[in-house]
Amino acid sequence: MPLVRYLIDDRVVAVPGPCRCGSSFRRIRLLDGRIEDAVVLPGGRRVYFGAFWLAAATVPGVAELAVRQDEQGAITVSTVLDRDGGRSFEEVAAGVRACLRDQLDLALPMDVVQVDRIELTPGGKARLVTSAYRPAGEVRS
Image 1 (spheres, helix red, strand yellow):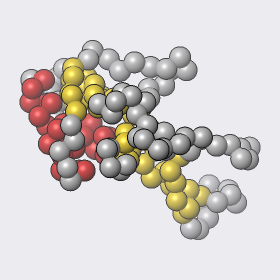
Image 2 (spheres, one colour):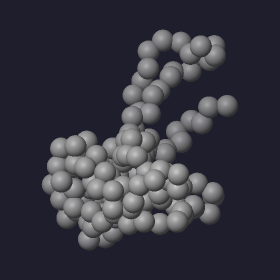
Image 3 (cartoon, rainbow, N blue to C red):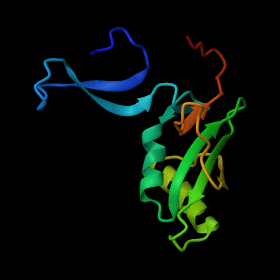
Image 4 (cartoon, rainbow, N blue to C red):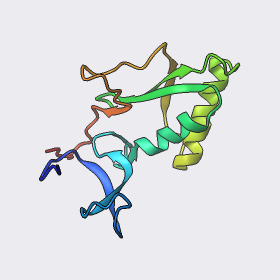
């Protein structure tokens, strides 16, 4: 059953053509994740989950990561090491920083910290990117 007017703030684009499953509903493709799942840079640029996912997927030694931005705008990347990766935390942290610098075309001020696990929400899901930062003048609904 389709959910009508169910707002989850996912960033999507329409995909033309019918679905292989035979559904007559419009198709969509997820772009970067939810609007709220982004960090905000000082100039107002938003960095969505996709940029951070690339670091998690391509940097050797990363098993999982989560990104948190506090009220002042400070960014912390919590990293769970791949225990079989054979890389030190310092090597992994340098790789995460380099990947994000290349992906975003800027040196993002952030702390990369090692954690044993990524905390789950009460619903059992991981919020991988969260931000409490609101630049001056930004209004959120």
